[in-house]
Image 1: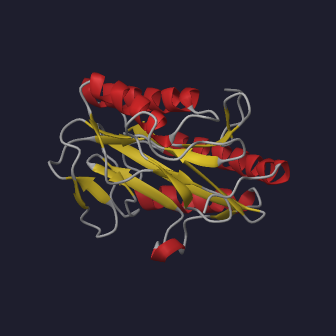
Image 2: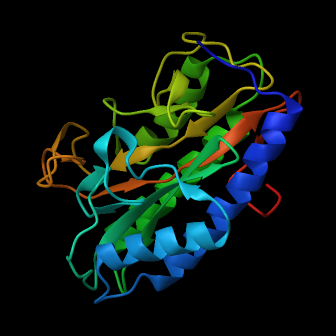
Length: 251
């Protein structure tokens, strides 16, 4: 069931989204060769509590951490560990905040030190796919319209679009209806309406888009071991388009 948010609910989610954006920006600055993903997780939790919020992920469906840290071929939901990030790695940082009873969700993929040209390009394309999706999102289009726009851009760049995972609605629960795929057919799916709050999160692979379970048994990795990237924002569908809630800067 899809719950359209009131102005009051959206205002609360915007407060939480700003906290999340600030925290993730600070954690992103910490990424460098030699730091462990477990250290990034601990910093995330400390910062979330510092700003008066709670982790949306810790304890969710048994996940024991505040941060999902997904390195190289791991697409999403990677467990933080004692692995020390190495020069040339890329790492996806996916973080959620619970503020006054409402969740927001955000992700970025970060280069560790000096990375290859192909890794840089993958990150740039995935980030742009998110911007394109946000620009497309508005009342009256369908989830198929949105997914089709994201898919066509990514595939035109020569990359794969993950099909087995998708974006989602969000609010009192981390995952709500509707599902927001990064692929689709025009005019198919659920119609977006004013007041919907959704997470758009392109997941892009250099090679084949098919998945396997990651070595930690929780995350998902590319089946062929190719690099993957992931970016995400929580947005609200408005009368005139959409607005990013996980940002303290104007779109």
